[in-house]
Each structure stands twice: as C-alpha cells, then as structure tokens.
Image (cartoon, rainbow, N blue to C red; front, side, top):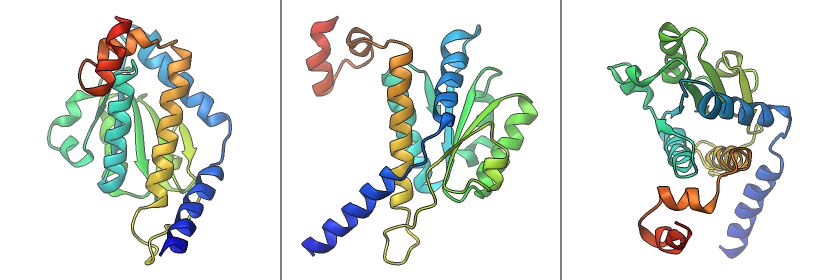
Length: 201
C-alpha cells in the first residue's frame, strides 16, 4: 500500500505542475480587484459549483473573505428558488465545473445574465471547449487530467486542481491589494490564527 500511496501522491503533484499557466490568471486577478476593490459601488465575488466542485467553491469563498475580498458561495439550485437575488451589477461570478457541462451551472449563467446582462464570468474547468468555457469571459483551465479514482470517475485530481487555482487567485489578489497581517487580524478573531494575530491589532 505504501507504494500505491506514493504513486497517487506523485500523480497529484504532476497534475498540479501541469496546470496551464497563462495570461488568464492575471486577467482574473485584475478583474476581481477592479470589481470588488475599485468600482463604486463595489461588487463581491460569487462562487458556485455543484457537488464536490461546489464544496471547493465554498472553501475558496471563505478564504477570499478572510483575506479581504468579500465573497459568498451560491448554490446553483437554490439560486433558482430565490437566492439569485444576491447577485448585484458589479459582482463577479467564478463558476467551477470540471466537465464544463453541469446543467445547473449553465442555467445559472443564463439566469444571472437575465438580471445583469454584462456580469463578469470566470470559469475554472477541465475542458477548454466546454459550454461553460464558451460562455465565460475568462477561462482558468485546470488541464485535462484523469482522476486517480480506480474507476476514473470520482472527483479527486480535478478537485485538487480547482483548490490550487483558488489558492492562486486568493494569494495573488492579496498581493495586489496589499493585504496585511493587521488586516487579517481584524477578520479572524478566534481559534489558533486569531490567537497568533491578536498582537497585530
């Protein structure tokens, strides 16, 4: 089993190293900074995804919040039952779907554009030619990697790559907005991180 575990870890590492890095990342960071930190009224980041991609989207949203960029997770199905009302004109959508064909996500795009025709859409997807990619202003491609699940089905590597790309967006945006330890301390009062940052207030 030890050899198998090492092989699985190696496959994850290789997939991360093969994330296609291009100008799209810079465009995404600049778009978020402009919409959330420069415009008046300022917008927020809205992340969405179904299933396990949705769990990753929720994690990215909370990380954005703790690092100075207002963000929420919007469940694409709940959006169709009234939660769509959270979307405002200067918000930016970051939509996660490995296949880029998730029905609820594609419907969310249409519904969002019914409210605000010019709303910005960033996709994190494994398929550059997917329906989601074609409907996006900016595409962050994870790379077209096979899952390490023995069935080749369970989201494993794909969710790892989405998480890494989310981390990249968060960290690069922190640099752009010059987010400090003092800023962090104001947002994170409890737990271990609250304890070690209390001195920065």
